[in-house]
Length: 300
Image (cartoon, rainbow, N blue to C red; front, side):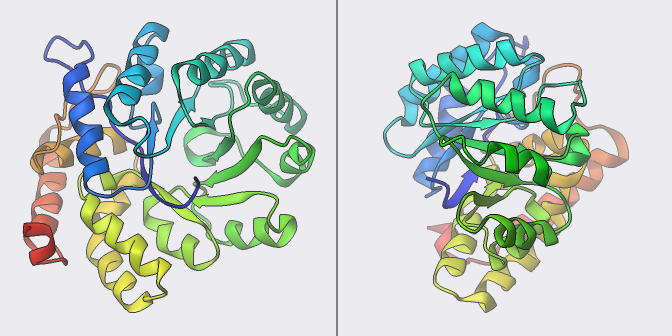
């Protein structure tokens, strides 16, 4: 675990807004068939906080049924309270997840001590390995060094998904903690920088629309072919910037639909992209689709 590329998979919805389990499973299976290393279920792109508990359980069971055992399955834990997060972590383990991606409690902005207590309490509720999710622009909470210091004794907190836009964080974490925490690149348009600086892999949004290129990028990094990695990354970058925008879920799902991999349907409070923004994203995706860098490999 914690190497390669893990797309933050989307949850697919029917026209009436209910979860489309069959379509969700098809998305997951297609990504695994295209060679991704693992999957994040119920992350931001999985619209975690738009689902009720029963729906979350249904998505996890669907993932286990569709691709369990083929690749590691990591579940997002994103709840309003610590007690609810701990309970959901236990439930995810019982359903068959292989790991957890743990977020700060939603809405509340904690002190470092409160944040560490939240993470510790959830970790003690499960035996699964945990990757902390650091995304200050999205969640207004920074998993800072005092917090990571407090968490160092918690054995099953093993990794950090680093989604701060400043690539210096990768070096600072590694310099401070050595191999205590595995670091995963978590922001698409800083992913190659993160892996160059020592991140072990990539949790990705746009991989859901272009998995073959994402897998090829990772393989180039793994063999040290930075010329090829840069070539793919530069082609990909206009789309990767979408991962840093507030409408990333709608943009990624629209890209999936254009590429024939899923539906752009989202659940309120999100709405599908419209107007000039929709036209802009469509043009970006279509340009990338027309200039794909892998040639015959993708066509095959």
